[in-house]
Length: 385
Image 1 (tube, helix red, strand yellow):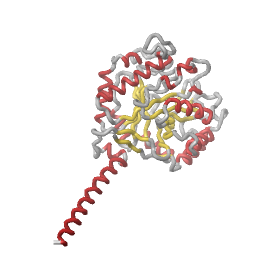
Image 2 (tube, helix red, strand yellow):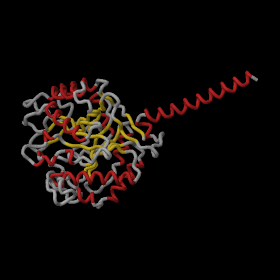
Image 3 (tube, one colour):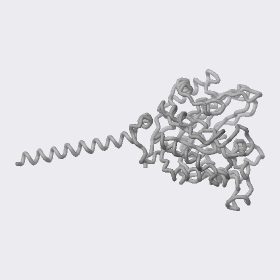
Image 4 (cartoon, rainbow, N blue to C red):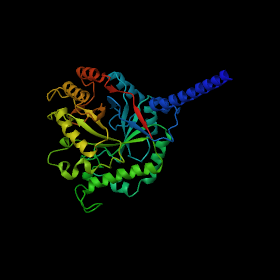
């Protein structure tokens, strides 16, 4: 009898331990699974709120690996070529969703990126042309607020949800500049009497409310696989004695709020014009970092566009990049949790603007050497709620 009792207890213990172990490892597999598992549908995330989490240590290594002048020519070859060039895989691939003819979810691009175990990072670009410096005649911020595009946005949201793929999405890139049509400067600017709070500049307030409206729509559709990003341009870089430098144009006036946004990002370019004096990474980032801290005390930061042109008469590109990556790695800016190199070359009519990482053999060698550090990581981490 005693032997049988002991045997029964032992059996129960073994079964219980087995069940616990099975559940534990199932839980672990969900929380540490790579992106491939999601793309293959082996994990059903439909009932979970999935976010791209900041890495517990190190910094994500992302890129726009040259998706063409329209930033939406997404191919597997471009991503593979870039990863082979720099000797490291990328966490995310950063591309534009241009609303030129219609508001349409870029499913083919998303699935192409996901097939390579890379996170698709979508830039919602509400524009009907690529002209700069003027408001779009169709996709105005006020129109978004008023619900003029709700049907299309809801369809976009449903299509995004149905992919079952964790996505990063930003709306209104570099909104505090004066070039893109969704710029606050071009949508009411510093006026205060035409929209909303009479004590708040209309341009930033419209952008804030338009972005909130989009996220609220997506939430109402039960979209649970998007990590939302707020992307600005450093105050130090936006211009001299222009509206971009006015106090009303400060980035905190554009911010939708911590309850809406998951990551906050900035662009950092040493120069994008040949013959123009360079600005060091430290000069830009010291100002930008303080600005980002003023927006949120808790959200992770990312350098969403990092780059410098090849212009030997003005500076050494390799040394500029060395300073940037070393300062990030040594913890000078501890809330920076991701970088995204902007690997593009184009003809602006007067000069060839070459931001590509391999614009010189020295440049690509330095980048490969520094990015090879285990501090810069490729594998993404997720949060589930």
